[in-house]
Length: 509
Image (cartoon, rainbow, N blue to C red; front, side, top):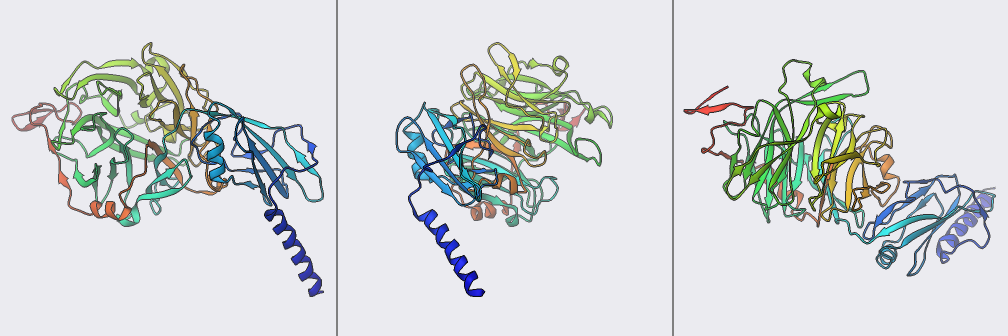
């Protein structure tokens, strides 16, 4: 009996080995299916950058064997076979095929075979290979779904041309603290900021191979610097300063509410190690979430009326504004309101200007500004020249937030919880000349099942045009140094304390 079992196992193993050792080819005979193959992620009818990583996927029809072909106008067809439901595309053949077919369609044909049945051929899937390149890397934070357990928190980078993921800084090297608000100057991996929110606390400034820890809290600011935006010249960084509160709810659709009791805007001069502000952006209202125009002449931001009562956080709605600024002369113009929440009935948040200066994408939700926690959060686009705006077609019934433009203004990255309404995942969409978005697709992974099994959020993904090369050990060493104190500009007579005026060395409200 045992001998028969061993023989059967040996035969089965030989069959599997033959399946993999023989050159991959399409089945000679197959039965056509009426509907497209059920694949995850959904990589059908999408626009792909020619330099994206292989779009590995799973065929979810219960098949025993799967074959998929990838072809276009030029080059050799790729044939991939699998004895499970995962199609993993050879990266070199994939890169060669896409590079040779910029501006052409990518045709995917899928065959599957269930045990005891004939091969089934699904209708071909047609995608488009764009000639518009996408930036090679993204940087993001991994954090648990509840945003309160920091055991595995870290800042990571992922090469979206290969799907390789590496840590930049992990909090097991920094006393398990909270780290966030990573940002880069002009998509440059050599110009980076990372905030450490508890001991060892401070802001890591990594600028052209030099890293240091800053203490950005001054006697004239209500807090350390929080949400950052690099000026295009690389010499200044706009920040918000915030008194942030959180509420956790045991009932209702929104489990967490992050809101400000107060907030203002400041600008940090990298070379002078000095913070400055102006009465126009340090008022009794709550200014927040700065974002520069690509020429550096305007600072975009959001603003809401000051909190008056304990329940105001549930009713706070933000307007979208911008203000002229000259770095060379350190002068400000008059604030201009682009869109009022009273006109939309929604709160505007996270403004991001396209690098070509044509569009601004922002979120709108029922309330507040921390839209990643609000199911009502959707993405909108505004033509800056006409100030006309519309809801993007890429939205779902779940959270869309934390969007970011590619450096050539052709791609928009955003996070969405549409898969399970729990974890945020990264999506890409192509934006055309008129501001229209293509069908979004999930960021490719080496193992396509990762997008379901990873129990961590992708938090605040941003594009960079290369790899961050400073090591996690070097950054951790900087994080544990004594911070350099930042100075406050003595030439201004307004504090970043929500409209507090400085007079004779004292602060009065």
